[in-house]
Length: 484
Image (tube, rainbow, N blue to C red; front, side, top):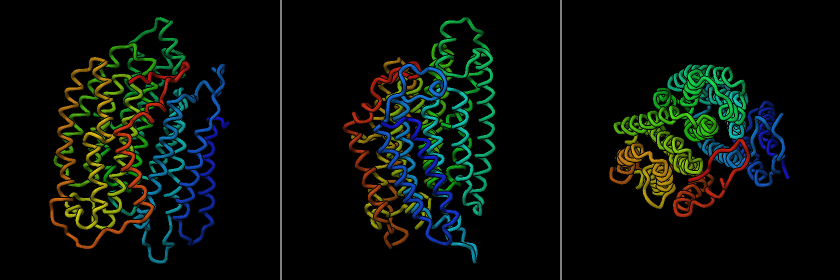
């Protein structure tokens, strides 16, 4: 049996080994490092099914800020799968990364582009287990600093440089809010451990105003990570300007880690009705802004950026309902359908472009790619028998159980908006005449990955039990409710 903390250590060490090996690789093809990264992460993923349980009596020291409950293990695997898929997409995107400087190594920069996601994965895994504000902050900064570099990696592109600067400035600002909020909470409770904060709130009479102020500041910092309104201003420009695999990683990995931290942070302060009321307002604004801002978009990456904001709104409904299982299932569905769309976007974008009009007649040029994008868009919209439909169903079911009628009605209305802008892409692929006649080339690895994603979307859309069983009845003082 393997101790749970060894997973992050293995990922971090593997990233360091690959980064050091890349320094001595000369002018060899760096795509081998991506394959090695995928193999290493897959080995860690397999090892995650052979974990030793944490000591039952350990409540101090290391285990006071690290949790190995089902929620943490589930999101560690989520981070590993996400990173593996992103590295597969990065292989297809490699030609766009090459700097093209005369006389320079044609593979310059690719090694770092393939290894940085591994360090990001380690940070995401630590965030999944973080149950102390100190560890939350440290792991969050590891993720954020990796994304600083990845977002602005193709720095010779002005749009990418602009995206990197915006992400750097706004992320640093949100981190300031987060740290300031943590200091207020610590000043009131004298604790940074989430379980101990819950104990203090339950057993002691404290001043609520400074505590709620600190919680609000923490929510500002986490709202940036999950792209919730009004902290979403960075999303469209950063998603459009960043390299496409990085955009996919930001959209799925960063968002998932932000939501698991949000669930843990809210658990001890859920006794205050003001927190739930604030989240209801944020969820409603996020749903409205994300869906309506996506309607006029003509750039597919920008459309998916606003779509990401809209899906953050649906996830916030699950958070308001304190249903960890609904949020987790929705994130898995979001992982499958979003990465499928981005995988097609990378292949077609390298060949044609990123505008929706560039997908005109794709069904005639490359029927498989058009079908894959169709399935991704159908699932994002919430068509029955797809994972996206069941994700929305579980979210709305949890909201109804918690009597959040307003959010359910608003969510159903905004789902209709989603059908309009997602079907714009389908219309371009199947109804418009192609601009180019030649087929879009597709590697065997990418084709296999897309087939697996399509199959998973349909399988989990009909049989969701594998995901729900993975979150079965967490125990211990540092866990949250997993009820649907």
